[in-house]
Amino acid sequence: MKNLEKYLVVKEEVKEALNTGKAVVALESTIIAHGMPYPQNIETALEIEDIIRANGAVPATIGIIDGKIKVGLTKEEVEFLGESKEVIKVSRRDLPIVLAEKKHGATTVAGTMIAADLAGIKIFVTGGVGGVHRGAEKTFDISADLEELKKTSVAVIAAGAKSILDLGLTLEKLETFGVPVLGYQTEELPAFYSRHSGFNCDYKLESPEHTADILRAKWELGLDGGVLIANPVPEADEIEYSVINEKIEQALAEAKEKRISGKELTPFLLDRIKEITDGKSLETNIALVRNNAVVGAKIAKAFAAKA
Image (cartoon, rainbow, N blue to C red; front, side, top):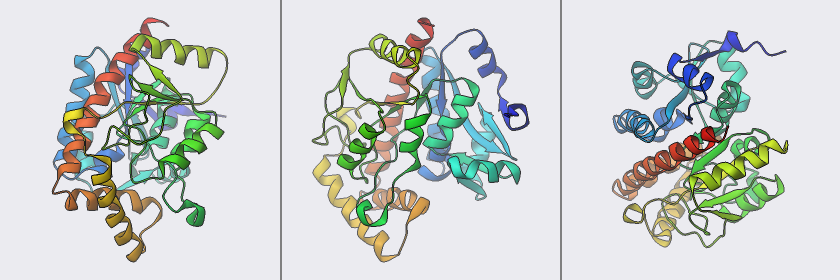
């Protein structure tokens, strides 16, 4: 039996928005604690909240402080997660331990989806989702994000799956799980830093209203599970796929040499790619999250209007 009050704290601004049917957008905190360097991590997190407000929705950044899932962080809590070295990367498997031991945690895509669902938030904005890692046929390294998309009814707006992954196998896994991969005003799956991947989305979305109609149809039919809304990075900010792929291969080779795997792999790769692109990958990462926030807020607003 659920005892949510013991573990879940919803910020008053978020609670009021949910109770009155206003648009709410969930945001993850791994990007703050593990995805970007200081101080860009904190600056970007606060800027994304402002963008969501400017586009008519209420932001709910999710993290764990002292064993409590906070749905909607204060500025001080965002700064704490961005500066502390004692913040655990939290996915589904980690939640009970971090909560029971009253530790601090930054939620991954999977962890954020769980918390958003518990709070009643249906729209979630992130950078890119996890997926099937390159070489997974030998390592079986597949992100828990995909399993969460299979079972948790939250729409995730992202610039596709992270380009460090095997995008073809990631799409195959999502198809098996019955997760729609919808391209926002595009037919091609974006590849995080790049607008193009060579793979197609399942369907093309024309507008926030079109998106809201599809989400409502899915969930009103009782088809549980998430939806991946793939939103390409703005053209001016993208890194050509062939260029970034070369850097990714270099970073992967270094990770293999250093025997880095599991949940340490993605942060290592993102940090190393930032170094070997002279910071360009970080600029692109920030730009795509900003863009996702605009689109996510508009979708949340359209979804709330049809409630």
